[in-house]
Image (spheres, rainbow, N blue to C red):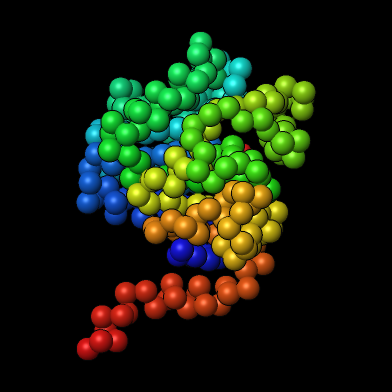
Length: 262
Ligand code: GLP
């Protein structure tokens, strides 16, 4: 795990966009896995800026959404489909045929989830998966207790997540109780994972994710088993990390190994 602690939320987003840009330079038809929530918004803004300055061409980029509320139509303002269009897709030159998402009202839920997994595989898997983290340590909508090898499926939201996400709805009772989400096993197959977190309220989840035991009770802790994970946090989200000075030292000295060997 590479833990990158930056001074501000803006810096996390710049760093994440820079990493994605670097990956795109190696592979123009990059397959991205994209998360919703407030945290990745700054990354989508950075990437949009790069696209508009002609530094990043999205015409061969493929995008898969991480999750979706069950029961919401695609054009519902709180659906994740709507979020992705409004906050990212409509501002960049990605092709509609390259955008894949979990539907809020599929006629056959199981078949839809199965097909989604197959679609990801047909593109050679996800190259870079962007993740946020819930206060309870969830990734996607994989709530605590989710199998660490789970696949795309229905999940029931916890009361805490319903309360946390109520801020986007006019009334808590409007928050859907069920959702579709890529499983932890699905996420773990991405070639690179970038998890972002900002603010003190995420500090416990980050502590458990990075330095806690690998357990289904803290779903993000599964990332410890992934070979290419970058955890990007601001000072507040990283404040409970025991080894934060070490992570900072590693980041500062990154790229110096070659000099050291001279
Ligand atoms: C939702 C999403 C997650 C996201 C989490 C945190 O529950 N399903 O993918 O990471 O919220 O969101 P925020 O970044 O707004 O704190």
